Length: 150
Image (cartoon, rainbow, N blue to C red; front, side, top):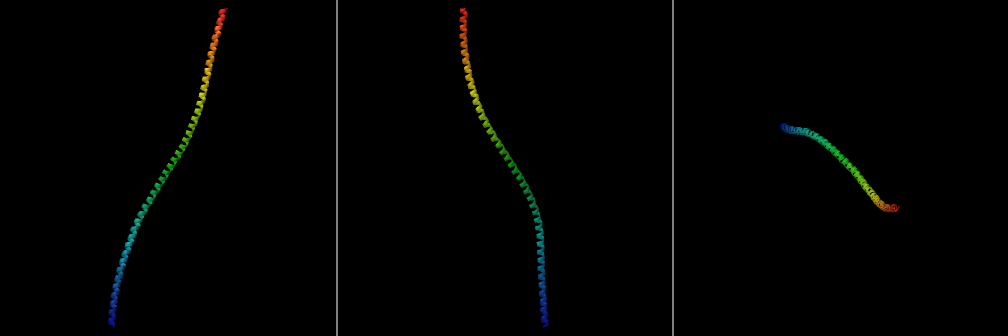
C-alpha cells in the first residue's frame, strides 16, 4: 500500500510538474502576447500622435482657408455694395438727364416762341419801315411839287 501510495504520489508529482510546465508555457505565451500588445500600443500611440499632429496641421490649414474665404466673401459683398451705390448714382444721373432733357425741351419751346415773336415783330417793323418809306416818298414828292410850284 505504501508503495502504491508512493507511485501515486510520484505520478501526481509528475502530473504537477507537467501542469507547472504547461502553466509556465502559458505564462510565457501570455507574457509574449502582453509584450506584443504593449509594443502595438506604443506603435499605435506613435501613429496616433503622428496623426494627431497631422490632424492639427489640417485644422490650422482649414481655418486659414476659412479666413481667406471669409475675406473673399467680404470683398465680394463690398464690391456688390459699391455696384449698388453706383447703380443708385446712375439712376439719379439718368433722372437728372431726363429732367434736364425736359427742361431743355421747355426752353427750346420758349426760344422757338421768342423766335416766332421776334420774326413777327421784325416783319411788322419791316412792314412799318416800308410803309414809312412810302409815306416819306409821298412826302418828298409833295415837297418837290411844292418847291417846284414856288
